[in-house]
Image (tube, rainbow, N blue to C red; front, side):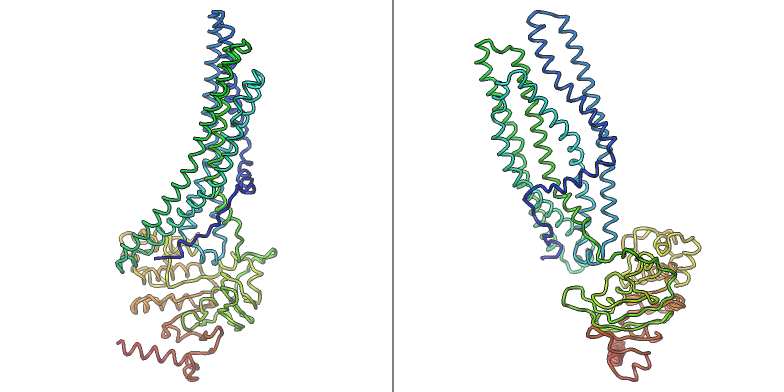
Length: 595
């Protein structure tokens, strides 16, 4: 069962994007004090580590050879104090960076969430919610190791490697160069591995994103799945996705683990070369035992940073794909945004005008063509037409969820593109057939129409649409918790709550998009009284297939063939015996036959 959910929407890239790395590191800038303290702690750790082999050389060549116990005691105590300081500094730097990293992740996640909320409907139309969720949660979490390692690993280990190389060359440049002889081979091999590793990790993240999207979609539609006994089929699809993710992970890890093996092989080969050449120099008396021991320790210290830096690069390769996916979203500009000189919308009167409006969701496929009409303040207009005719598109343009392709939409004589979006939409209310309920109390769901509303205002709004009685019959009344999407409530009850939410918002322009389509006849009788109060003094657009619900509209407009083909009152349209008459009589006949 192929779905849009599994669309491979990420492009695989072959090299590390320097701009992405720079953008990530920019998040460290506000935390420079914490970074500075971390660097101080790391400097203590590095200095202590560098002094240990020197003290070992002195102990062997100067104190052990001369049986100087006092000197050994002194150097032993000094070594103990140095390593104690190193341990404390190491613990503290990890604490600071862990705290700082979590603050950075909080900032990134908040920025990403805030940005997604500003994006236009076209963004959500083309992406499953599961994939968006994967960005906000999984991809942001993946950056934790990257930020921590960039400071704790990259900087000190690079400094350690350079310092160790200098010390080794100063102790005995011949032995040092022999120890480094294997380095070019290792660097070439590492370059080859990283080139292919990043692509495999990107593929793994794609498969993970697909699986998350599938899980979210299936659990959201679990009633449909169970109703059609499709559990077996969806389980097979889920298994296929899991297998794809597992294979992608195994492929990435197989190449990824070669980093460690390569560094350890190079370390071992370098040490063998060091011992081999040291034995020759010892025969000539040009090198001391203490120097060889110190160089052996430094050799270990030289290769360990390379291993850690390789691991950091591996972390970078592994998680950079997550960063790119995050920035991909952040770089998307909303299709609908305020102009530079957007006007804060004053209190709307409610005059609405379409001037030669043409609109297309996709290029060259218009949904509306050259549509023009005027609606006066306080007028109730019903939009009628077949599915896909463009009724919902008209109200979406009024709310500026989309912008016109050609022409303009005016509210109180001003083009909506000139108005501040937030101040415009705050004076509108939209109720749809599929009423969304949040996982909160009924009171909180109603209060969403006016966040600072008092309990009394909430109750009055519910009473106005005849929702109060059924709410009070629930176990906790207005404090009753409803599940996500309001699954504990009937369709009619959810609609009544949405009406209460709308009347609490006190909008100047009201849009009812099939808002009563799922309400039974008894519930509809109750809510009609509330709708009358809701419509009073407001400009309203009502979309309805049930034509009996719009007979009292001030004007009915029939949308067909991408334009308004008829308009008038119910009585005048019936008399004209046009498209509206045909629709009304067909529906009337169907209802009589059903009865």
